[in-house]
Length: 112
Image 1: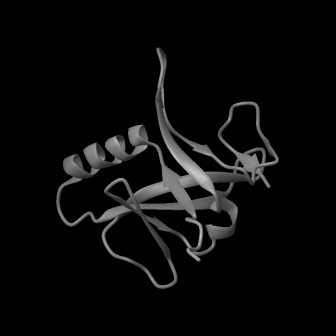
Image 2: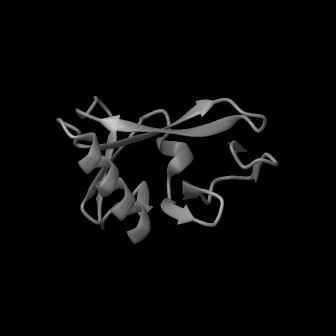
Image 3: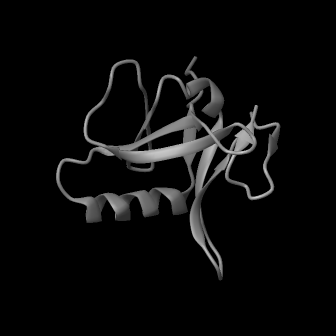
């Protein structure tokens, strides 16, 4: 039986990541997702370009995009979906995370 993916991407998120990676140039192989302890609710998502795979990272390949998940973040991101949302005033990555129990008023941090 296949183990469920730690994270999936919507078509919009995959397209945006591909676009960003093309602009980054060089030896970027994907994006790295993690969480940090910050914000008024306790945790925030962090994302950066990945140039190499680090030990113990969860590697997810979805819709032609490679996502490397920081081992300390895997349990917080399990079952999440990354989306790219654009509206009249902003554009941003959004994490639809089934593990989140609450968020702060500005939406920048969450708690589990």
